[in-house]
Image 1 (cartoon, rainbow, N blue to C red):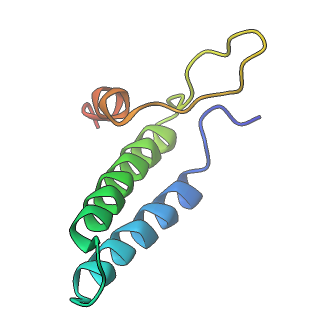
Image 2 (image 1 turned 60 degrees about the vertical axis):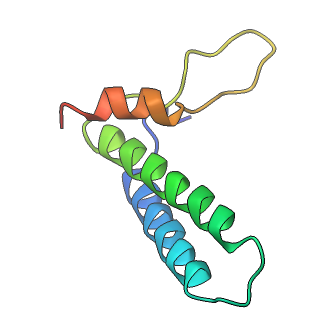
Length: 85
């Protein structure tokens, strides 16, 4: 398993989430659009921060615990790891 993640996949998913957020926000007939926009926007930034960490050789996963699945960094932790770059 690549514990650093794939930079290009993370970057492309970040871009897709940002474009989806903008597209949803620009459709006035969609109910719950403000909330959907916010969720997608935060997700886009989280993915971008993980992409930056990945590109610079940093892990984007927390240490593995026994009998638990792998977990990626939260947005706060991703920000603290990526802020130097």
